[in-house]
Amino acid sequence: MLIRCVLIQGWIQQNHTRLFDITTKISKGENTDDLFQLCIYELLNNRVINSIPDNEKFFYFARIVRNQYHSKNSKFHKVYRKHTFVELDSNMDIPQDDYEPEVITMEWVLQEVEKIKQEQWYLGQIFLLYLSKGANLTKLSKLTQIPINNLSRDIKIVKGILNNKLNEKLN
Image (spheres, one colour):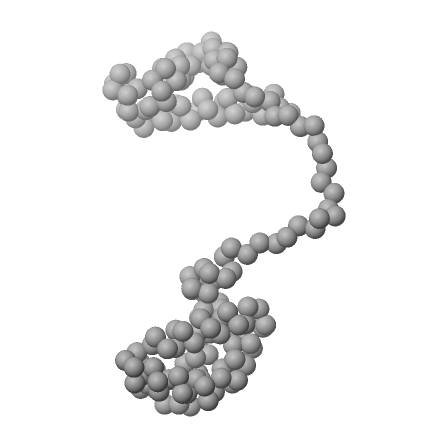
């Protein structure tokens, strides 16, 4: 292990500028130092690198750099790219709206369910039972002996109706 690291370290020291140039070309100057360090680390921890002839090590290194730079699953992407943030301009004008979202109350939901119940008794009654059982389909299914799939479909229908009425109310 130690001999392997010494051999590859000597090769890296001899070819440092060429390896850095390879990294710069592939990364187009973006985070070159970080990418170079990471790829050298990968090269040092590689077990087969000493079995590769010296002139082919450049191609091997270039492939490591390319994989690290272009892959979304690479260590380079996860460490240096994934969590990059852009600073906002401090002179940017942010409009101050007096927007206060309308709070949806349980009373509004119950009123709308009563209206649904007048038109479609089954859907309204199932939804009221669903709310009374703590929004638990399994309990509701055991209580009513209605299959969970049917209950789920019917609850989604009522939720869709409520969402449509809410959108109409807000617009």
